[in-house]
Image (cartoon, rainbow, N blue to C red; front, side):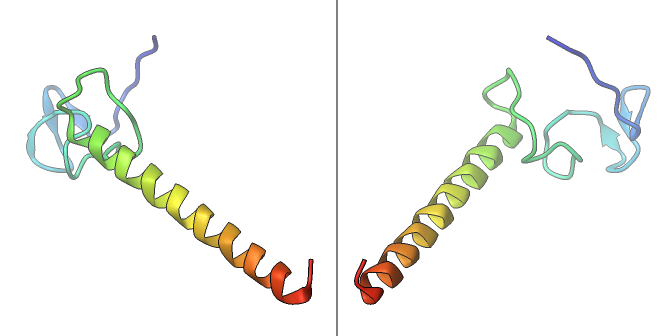
Length: 74
């Protein structure tokens, strides 16, 4: 397990949001980019949504490729 330092954290306050620092909250630079050990961290849900959207897009692109191949007779 590693640690990190945020350039927006000054003491216990997020300088970016002007409120107490809560890593992974909406507005945090890590929101939607990192999964946290605390399951209640909003970032975790955002990461899951992003992953679902990525998978759906990949599936749609694969379906398009298959449809085009079928049109060409493959």
